Image 1 (cartoon, one colour):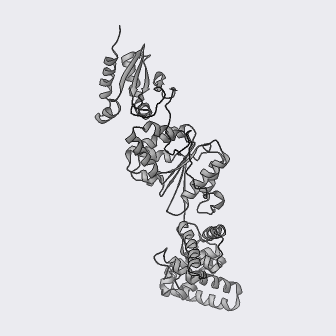
Image 2 (cartoon, rainbow, N blue to C red):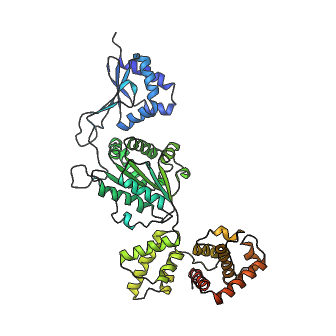
Length: 473
């Protein structure tokens, strides 16, 4: 008996409609058209490849059951992608997607259409992907410290074997100005040097979103998705800006899955950890956690000095040590501002014919920070002393009588008494609730040592210099 294809598909839709909500049915099933029935194999036409893969990912079980109910246990479903007739350039014949026994793992692609490159370079006819990388962002000028060691090490491992490490995806997160973009692009640049066959692409989430919107307007979403699926190393900057963009997240999710399944490398930067990305689909957050999430912390003073000196060498600028230290003690949480101060100093010195000294440095730094520390706190002194003696700061308020800790504690009390306006009792409270007599004894001990112990004197002088350099004046 010859069966009518429209009747078969109408019966399938009747069953499907009972199992999905009305909006999903309207979006994903009403646009489908049955085009061919051969034996127990039904061919349906879908608008684009993204549409097909969405059906396979979200409704394959329902389609499998429905087709077999209509066509028997050997029932199969094949897809035909409808190409946009409004496209101006000629395209190859329609692409067919055949799903064997309704398994998305057995897909045959025939005559895939030409793919448009959203990063196309005018005048070049063949497909050419500009990686969109800044060549100045490299590993050799990305200073390593405790603040970034994990992320940098993971990045170097990825650069050696993109897509072949456990760090896929790599999510680099941290506050503004800590070097996320520098590190992400350094990975891309290193891969381009050592893996000439790899297609690397760096793109901001804003540009990705704008390209997607444009592809929807032009009816070329299929091209958009196919282009991104050809990338071997995809680096997306500031993924937090995908928040609350549902359609963009859907397509991004699809691209992520295809690239990850094909062993391609994914690298993302964000201003917060994946778990804190509000407005992001749970399934995307889950995938961000598949690999490694590495945070960048604010660099310590030694790392800040190393970063500044590296920048000075590249720019051919020489600064006195006290100027370098003053800059690094006041610019603490933003590497970009640290480098900005150096550029501004060089400009001010050149334009106004002024020597770069502490006075000029203070003038420049005031433009970068609202207020240089004008009031020294006991906590600040404790932190500097602990760093100076390389001891845990919490030990200063503890009860240990280890000599190195006792000396650091007494020096902290001495400096707190001389450099703050806190009472003896208030100072004692900051050191584990010690009474004022302990503070007096510590101060007298340090004062006596200053007259007899040159090492203690050098320590006190160095600490007072560091503390006073945090003041504006």
